[in-house]
Length: 235
Length: 233
Ligand SMILES: Nc1ncnc2c1ncn2[C@@H]1O[C@H](COP(=O)(O)OP(=O)(O)OP(=O)(O)O)[C@@H](O)[C@H]1O
Ligand SMILES: [Mg+2]
Image (cartoon, rainbow over the protein chains, first blue to last red):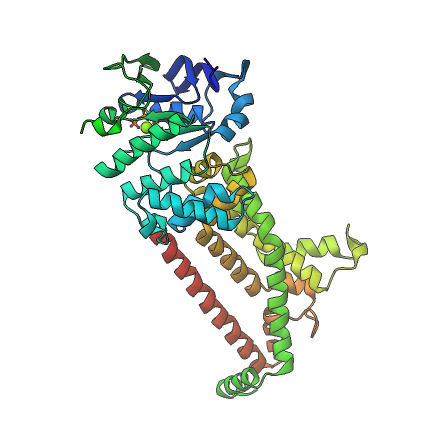
């Protein structure tokens, strides 16, 4: 088995007196989808942000390719590999198309090829009719779809999704599950924090519950082989 | 002494007839103030961003310092600059006193605190998620900064307009370090202040009209921007 992309150890995070996170070990591995559930305020968002390099933990070690280093040292590497998707995504004050193109435009890529990719991704997300609308004016579910499209288009090694389906309608949820399954099978590491357990349990390889700052593995309800048949999904 | 009506009519005819002296004064005012804004804005906005974005010891003291500097009268800035640039001052050798450069420097000093203070509040109001989104999608810190600035651009425009409004209307500093030399350092405000005392009311009124119209335009732009800001929130 391949070693994990990132192995986080001894992750702690406090807010005031409260110890929010005290996690012994958390692995982020290629082609593995990990579901994290937990009550409101359990620390799912905080954990995902630490794993994405956006929030500084009080302490944490990260093992990158058998080399262990401090979180601060690994931060730049983490940020280059992980794209984090906000629970309530922020839409830049510009068109949907430009929001989706944002990540690609940061790299030296011809404009024509960027907008071809963007158009294709928007078609997939059924957002093409909104391409020229200001993204600020979209509905909650549409914003989430824009944010997911904006994140996946940069093709990161790790995608950290914070409640990606909360505001989505049924059809968008199903295509999100399908997308995640596909990306995972292509080798992307996927982290999902979600209350939508019925939707994500079938595609997740691991399911952890965040309880009192610890990650507790939840036994899968049924053993399944890789390449889930999404059409069997409940709900 | 001419009557007010006569002077006003003469003022209007000066404006519409394109009186060379009058328009020279107006163009000096705009030239100096636009230069000052142009040079100050990038540095001030970088400072404002640093104050809004980085946590370092003394940050809050610095922010209140800039707010305090807003209240410094233009003549005091003028006096300070005068002492620095005068023959016996530390930069006397540069022979900058009574030049447009000195006026630009003075107005830069006047606009800097406004730009920093207003720019800082605009940047501080930016959602933390802007920076996070930019960063996670692969933006360098510099690109992320421009993205944040773009998101609060109306607030930043408002800062620039307010700063421009202050410096084009200030008289104390330009008078002290410019010297009111015709066709060189005589701008709208110094002309009004000094020429009026010589009985040149028509020119004073004409220049006053220009300033009033400008104030109207600037305030209209500011309220439009405020409206945009409110819509955005
Ligand atoms: N910057 C902060 N300062 C103080 N407390 C914070 C901060 N960020 C998060 N917290 C606290 O940490 C706790 C966990 O927050 P977090 O957003 O990680 O929870 P969550 O599991 O994602 O919850 P939800 O299911 O509602 O999304 C909350 O009680 C929150 O108030
Ligand atoms: Mg959360």
